[in-house]
Length: 463
Ligand SMILES: *Cc1c(COP(=O)(O)O)cnc(C)c1O
Figure (spheres, rainbow, N blue to C red):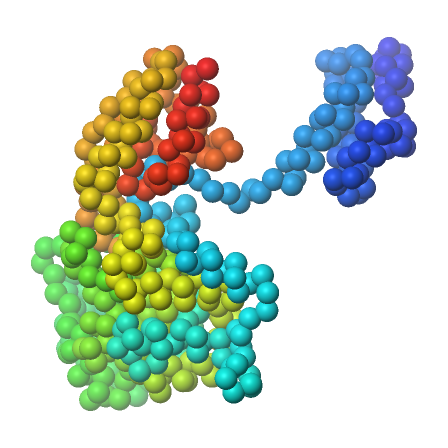
């Protein structure tokens, strides 16, 4: 090391000296002494490097403490944050699927900030079950004899297979051996549930006699799976639910259906094609149906299991349930969401997923025009409203585009890539897409309360 640099380094203050200063004292009012020390050391190390490189020659005490404070502030900021969804995909898995409604949030705040009757029967004054609060409600909506809830639908399928087919064989059509996002693969889920999967039929055609041909003394379950995020079209055939139910009755097996999204409303009312509801499925005689809480239902992440009482009771006794059980915050949000379905008109307005799916062309056009006219006032912004297509997402109705309105934005002063990045990395990230040199926001998934922020950021970008 040269003599000069050595001399320079000696001008850096000592850590003890820094920590004894009044600036350090002030930071310790807001952050722990350990944190203040840790980040003071980190910044001092960085400055030492600048001195050695020759990129810095004077130690500025004010600059030093500003940097330390910035780092400490970053530590206290939430990394897990809200974003604005401009993709038009209502159930966007990467963006957290279903946004919760006000009723769900209120229920969480009300029950979770104090004690609750989570596992206490207040009428009898004895221990109760966390599943009792919503079982009746789920039975009402699905026509099931009994119901149970777990962490997510993957857990629901595991619990059903492990309880009803452990060490035995589970028969599934080759046309239903799906993988959905986040590495949920039916063959692996069955294996992890300690059962053996037996594939039958072909990708496009499976008949009930294919199932019948593999049934033996080890067979326990026929598992039907919603194809979720893909469709086989053309020359296809699948066994009818009634046929599977009849086969199972004859051979003493259970029939379980993983319904995936699971909707409690008729999707045709939303101009979408028909999605089978849990009630329809159970009516055909299927023993147990499972579905998600945070897909078309519009509630929190959950796995809902509905069906025959004897099977549900068996699942309640499986020790796996303890590991898969739903927490109290989710339970509150799920119950509040389900109660809205007692009045479907109210559900449509107050459950955000349903409100977004049922937004009319007129609603969307108004929102798009409003946003576009505000953006056009910004110097350097070109903006138009165009027709476009969004999707339900979340494995529901993959082929069905939802006609929507797009706000198409371009900037006369910089590239669309720069604008996209600026909007994406801000304090409230905005997720849109680039298409042919324009930045596109689909207004179906944008809340009215998001509009001010979008305008503000695009304004800032053009300053
Ligand atoms: C989404 C889905 C799952 C997984 O549900 P999670 O609630 O995400 O665990 C399982 N099966 C099907 C058919 C699905 O569509």
